[in-house]
Image 1 (cartoon, rainbow, N blue to C red):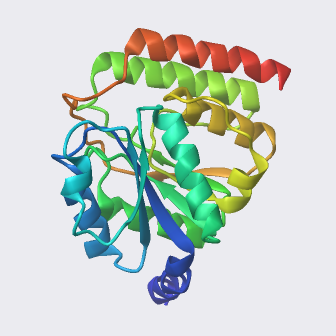
Image 2 (tube, rainbow, N blue to C red; image 1 turned 180 degrees about the vertical axis):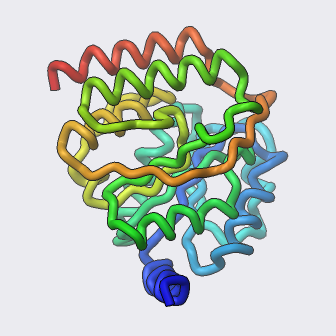
Length: 237
């Protein structure tokens, strides 16, 4: 009976959920990501934000059933997420699911977010890869654990995987929080502000799929410095 109830809830809510995918030079993977989402959940709206790609990212999704938004030049993941959030709010979406375009998030795990949402209506559900980190490079594992601990200490909210961009976010969180960061630090800024404002944050297990994209713009030193800046600023918000 519980399983049937969950399916009913998910069916009723799918039209209120959109998937936001920021993309920068992801022509090789983005079509498969979108196809995987549509295969699992055809009713879900998918919003692609092409963040100034200079490859064939746009052409790769020409025949896909998506909402397409394009930045003329690269503005950063944070800026792409904000563009996506605005597009979702304009369409009165109740929930926003953020995913990466490089295939590191499995569309099969979307149902895990829905299941967790059905059990308890969290304001923000964070995907957690920490049950199996064997495929995650050591430096990523270390930085993730450190940033997760720091955010947990700062907010009093237990954060397991602060660097996971696979998240389900209630629209009220997006409406209530003003985001400024343009890069990957936007994801830490969102967690810090959501927790400090008292939003209820939960977790759901997701697969650890880790491969370094040849177009990856992540830089350990630069992104660590940006995180520190955001963390320090949080004491003055």
